Image (cartoon, rainbow, N blue to C red; front, side, top):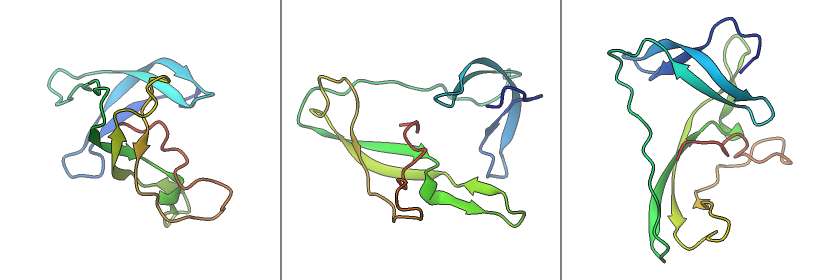
Length: 131
C-alpha cells in the first residue's frame, strides 16, 4: 500500500467476467510487514463472504489446507514489461501436533520448481497467504 495513493480499490474475482471492485479506506497499515487493513465502501448489495476461523484439535490427525498467495515462482512480465505475480492455490496438510508450544501452523505443500535467483525462495511472498 503506497502511502501516497490517491485512491484504493478492492477487487473481487478480478480475473473473471463477473469480477467487481469497490472503494476502500486504509484503516491501518504497516509498511515494514507490507500489511494493511481496509474498510470496504459501498457494500449494501455486494456479495462479500466474511472470513471464517477455526481451531485445530491437538491430535495426530492431519487436516487438509488450502493456501492462496502470489509466490516469486509465479512472477512473469506482461507485454508492456510490467511484473505480474500470478496467484497460486496450493493444497497441503497441517499436522495437528506440530508447533503446539509456538501456537502456530506448519503447512506442508509441494514446493514449486526453483526459479532464478537460487538464493531466494520460490515461496517468497506467500508467507502472508490466506489459509
